[in-house]
Length: 136
Image (cartoon, rainbow, N blue to C red; front, top):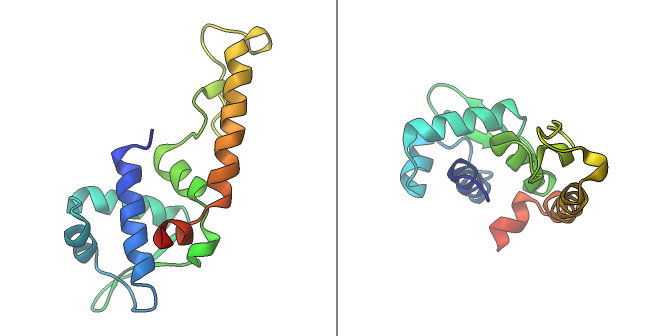
């Protein structure tokens, strides 16, 4: 399940996609338009900036903007930046692997099933982009 933080990230990003070409968007405009707490949104946008999705400009006429085309930002990248692993178990995560505390991966049937779930989910999330969620 997507966290509320990830959902807000996608709401903010879709707003920025809709305003693309109009210059940087002030964070207060995004917060007001999308009904997101300004402080929470600041944290989210900074994470997206550190992750290479957003840029920002300070001062008059400043704000946030996309640094890549919406077609070049897979949904999987946003989810990983905000929520971390996409896999449902840490032992099947590609980028955030951790061994499970009480099982051996070799003999665990759950591991195999969750790896299939991860692969199917990633197939969609890596193919779909910000452009796809804006056009609905």
